[in-house]
Length: 477
Image (cartoon, rainbow, N blue to C red; front, side, top):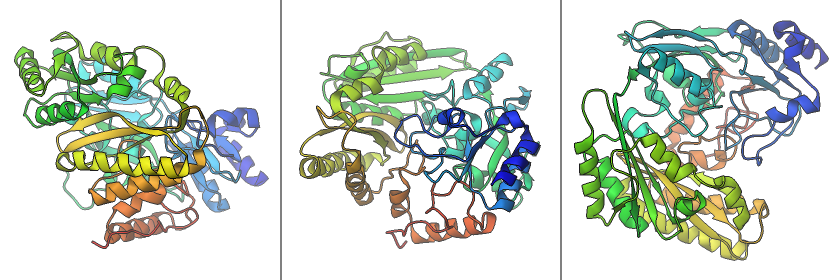
């Protein structure tokens, strides 16, 4: 291993190979504090050539690599395991904006560029990079691509997958695939770019990305609507999402979320709406959305025509940090996010609350589960659940598998997914392929085996550790 460390230092410079425990600390635990491991070293390359040299050296040594962007993940997908043998490949030094083309509507950036900096680069040429996340000040484009991140604007602009045009990727043996073609009109063969989007660093290391830009909105407007009943708020969100009004974002906060964020007293749920346009005033769109909401018992809480960003801060980010407020309630495990279709949501919601509630009673001796909020998409909501054990903050983590098992069973029964928005990582891996057909599982195994036969790329994420074999799928078709 000393020989490998020497090779890594030769590749990127001794100052960028970290081996002391104090220097490694920030790289071996994720944002939740729940997923933590140990690393042999953290390597911080400064460009694609250095990434290729590092990956090649690890490949020859048979040492596993954990690619890491801004380390803002919540499911353990970007941190090492507990062996102390893995190398963390941090892309934080690779922060160059390579090209911005306002005419073609594209931007090319290094994988380590922070999302907020991509947004700012687009804004400087009067364009919009529409992805927006709560962690946009620290998450990176490489991580966004590797996890196919969603965010607040998916309703109008889609997931990360729909924003990418091409990638540069270092493969598991150190070779480089250049998919940064400057032609959108290219319909030849397999789309390898999309193969790496959502792969969570298990097939290679994304080093550069060519992304779409949008016209910069000239008009923005938002509204915040309160509901006494969460179910009626869900009905209003569904009708608005499917109305053709094309909101740029739409998010539901339940009673608990509104209270924890300082937006309410816990008696009402909130629907936050945002609209934007490059060529027309938005008054009629807001008026129609509020008319729909009123038809379901909604009352305006934020001024019609207000700025959506300000609305969002007012309804979601005000008051104490939600994570801290939740911890005071006695948090078992922070959250898990799901996705179901509109026609199955009400039934699923009751089923998952009942199933997890039973586990809490039987295994934990009490507790509660809450649907904190839900992103809203045309095909259905993405509800975000939290589980509490009052009076026992930070305890009972050993019960998380039983809780997730109950939720997964409810999702399988209602055609949903447990991996939406925050990817699979390590946390969701045991449940991920239970949702997928066996043919899909076989295709994953074959792809992993072909590109990474030694299974050194982010082992234990997406697939079972140490092999190109995932857990068995429960579905046969």
